[in-house]
Image (cartoon, rainbow, N blue to C red; front, side, top):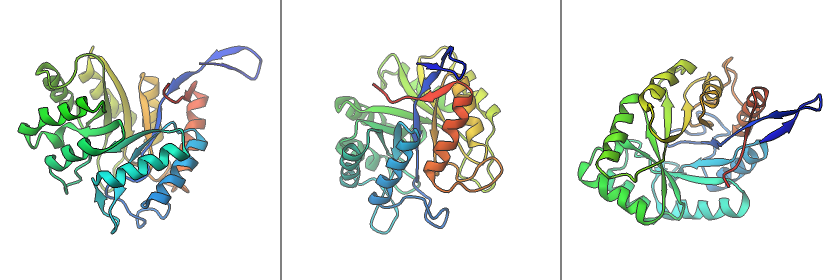
Length: 270
């Protein structure tokens, strides 16, 4: 992507996918009053984040009591509403969140209308007899899976599935998770290196999400290393100084400005 600098000369800007993860499976309004829970809140958040530069959304739905849900009907309603009201690329989550078993995750994949989902390799490994079936369902339905990798060891698990023919050959997608749901968690840019070392020469389109106040620093490091970024309240609700973001859109806007200063700009998939 070409841009024009203030002095009139042409300069290069590197495009990246900026996916917003606005709520996650565990958080509530007690964690941040602007964290979206209901469908209406999610749609309003999605529109606001898109206006600030987000190009995709990683969505979690909740049940009537606000708890994490893998109800495909709820996902399909949200998917239809997001398609109607935004231009965002839509990814739905199959996260178990210590609530659902692998069969429930498989059933969700079998029924959602979205064609992009995230799947934790560790979670589906809990039922080895269902792993191949789960991926086969995704392949039959044309679902593009982003594999959640919580550590470099998960990269080995990904390679094992590829070697066994469970995953299609060629390019695949993954997201590296820097940090955990831990009180006081502070992920750092250097946490990315072990993941990249584990990737080696594998064909992989990868993104990063990062827990803690240094989220933006970690995401910039990902862009500089050739990756993409996932941002949002699922992972961090404060800036590097510990000041709480007003809402997801404010975090997106701040990061887009930061990325632009280093020659990066979000761009939607074609």
